[in-house]
Length: 260
Image (cartoon, rainbow, N blue to C red; front, top):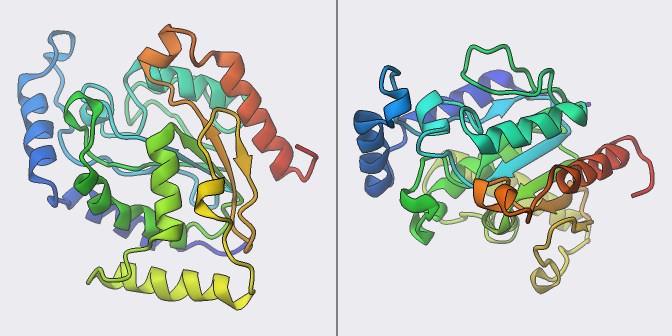
């Protein structure tokens, strides 16, 4: 297991919280925090970009879509305070990746075990629909996390947008971005992959579908895919607890070195 600079991860999350790159998202998060939902009228909303959360030494990286307006945007923690979080954290708990099956607020005692949660977008988007430019702006943070989280061996993408965002970070890094973090990622990651003379699989061969998994070679984490645990998916039965449980069990088998 390689040493992870927790201070660098914390520094990155402070940058995430202070980010104002997407004016539409900044306005929306603040508006939701002012107006609030009636049942949360007495609470103070977070109303800012939401930092990632979990074990910095983790072997499993979970990539979601974005904070919910009255979930993460209210509580300030990924998948916390809404039904999507209830669904996800129960599954993570049952698979051994969390110490409790619920996530209500930042001080509720939840701790992730060998798991780290991030998202393609750090701000709640109107109607849960981010714009392409907003996803591109946020990609720099995912790329930096991929550099810092040195022990990740499996990535679970929750939904097509998360799946595409992760692959975009591998196939189309922000080489022209001016930030030092993006420059370090490009220098540290892509040349290292090329040195082993193992090209990435054709991008067209990597299709999103629930339960799919891909060996990307090059010493990269294995990529797993699941439908996103949105209320629309869970209430209609498109994603059931058993379906997500099976994906997490496959990840555990992989991390233990067992056959998929």
